[in-house]
Image 1 (cartoon, helix red, strand yellow):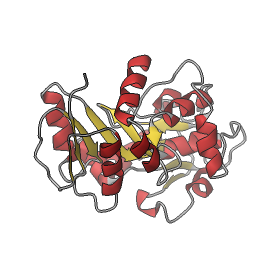
Image 2: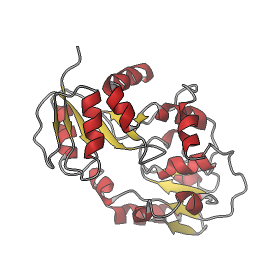
Image 3: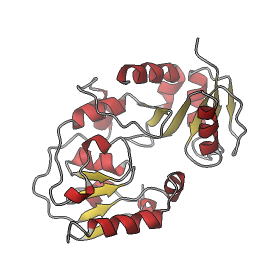
Length: 262
């Protein structure tokens, strides 16, 4: 029998309905919408990284239970939302395509996985994450940006452009990176956007796109690796609409999926 699960909205003013939907569909014992909540024991559903979310995740694992981290989707964001077991993101490449669900999700916004772009003339584009994300990893946005540029300069003289996360979703990321030589992130979903567009990536942290990333010292010869369809097929099975959350036990689905891939 599955242990009880408490759902913590962590006071997110926009995403509380998403957490509530997951809590209801997965029969959570209680939905706690407050910011900086007190850990109630057992398993946890947690939104994001701030307003006490990090503390809840830490305490949940310290007590030997599982947390289900709920956040914006890997792709088709603001329609789908990802759910990850005991981590912020998946970091795994399956050996084969799981299903065509990823094609359906991408197709809803008129997108698909494009062929690798072998002839690119654009700059190296840095896509930083939020300041809160860097704080979670014990650094800062400014320090990451400075250090990555210094490291890149050891291996390339190509132009480097920084695309602040604050621009999203006001502009179209596809327009900003479609012709990039490569896209560099820490753990941003921008790396998945680049992979979808056929643009190579460098990731400085472990994230969903990392299995297909190039090492930073190989920036002049970035890899165009096989496995994008397999990766997107897996990620599609870890993100859901609010209606899917209400109508299905997503926690049970995630438990089964992670048992299969581990």
